[in-house]
Length: 176
Image 1: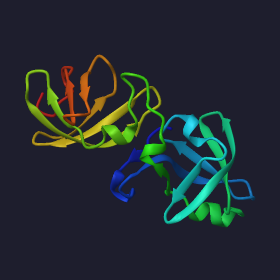
Image 2 (image 1 turned 180 degrees about the vertical axis):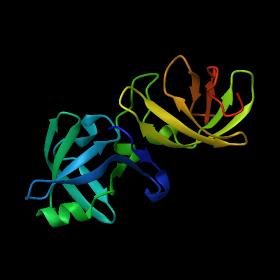
Image 3 (image 1 turned 135 degrees about the vertical axis):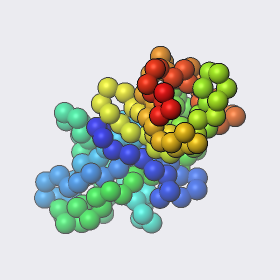
């Protein structure tokens, strides 16, 4: 999942992105997917929206660092390749609740970020998968910067108040 950004501008109200098409796999319409939610969301029989078309996941395969899916109605490499960059979406209410302290990426985007000393630092505009841990891209009054999604830096996430509190490491913020 290394190096991609999730921006929610393309996701209709009430839906969440659970994966992004990164390319075609083979000749029969299989898709290489970047998972954006737990793999349990990408299992056979789950119905997903791509653009304005509904599809059922027919087959799920996990290999190395990627997921391969076969979706109903997507036949042939050319059709699969045409979906590159598209998001697989499901209705938000169909997602299972996550354990305490875990969040879907769509819940993180848009949170206001403040430091432990109370400074407003900006808003999370995207989530970047880096391999070891996600990073949150923040834009705000001090500029744009990345927050590593680690317990050392992120001290609190309050979805009800739409805030994330961080304890910035030295050099993390643009003004440091």
